[in-house]
Image 1 (cartoon, rainbow, N blue to C red):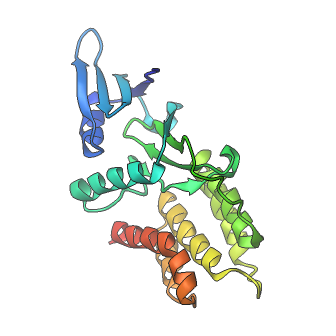
Image 2: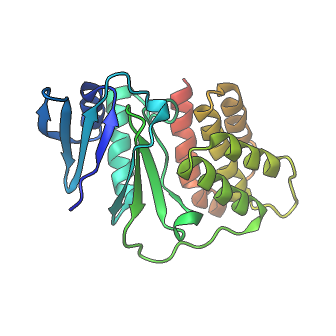
Amino acid sequence: MTVPLLPCPSVDDIVAFYQVLGFHTTYQQRKPNPAVGLQREDLHLQFFEIAGFDPAQSYGSCVVLTPDTGQLYRAFAAGMRAAYGKVLVSGMPRMTRPRARRNADGLSGFSVIDPGGNWIRVFQKTPASPAPERTGRLGRAMANAVVQSDSRGDARQAARILDSALARPEADDDPVALVEVLVYRAEVAMVLNDPATAVEMLARVDHVALSADDATRAAAAYEAATDLAAALS
């Protein structure tokens, strides 16, 4: 077992946030330096307080491997909805959604960015089957944008990739991929504190014509859109 030790400006804020995600305190001290240990099931995290620490400048990060990223995401999301009335998708703290990561062999992953600016990167440990590689113009754009924003934290570059793809519609574009790109562009807009663009993208989702089968395939994207709309209200 390896337990990461991560920086933060306030251990009290860290404790309050991670309690929302279902963690409990295993150890806490104020002297000689403020520090806290937190645990949820087999997941252990420890934090130390630095006076004047700027979360926006944090390089703190760790990888968490779990057999089911979706199950852990849903538990975290439920805690956020209960505490905040919405899933936090912008600002700090926030959480991304589980998505296949092209730079992680297609494994599903999501990230929690906590009040200390630390990226807790959750990846699927034992996938039931290899995730299919995204194909088509929009699918490739989506995969590249996810690497930029969800992995590297470069939401502006992700926005440029998605905007370029959306600016050149083609007759054979997969409508489900279009919905996914629009919803993700809305999420990226919220990370960039651009609610007007987020509202515009979600409105465009409502005008994409889908068959019954397409609507089933797009269910996860529509769920994400619902969370984004709640965060905007």
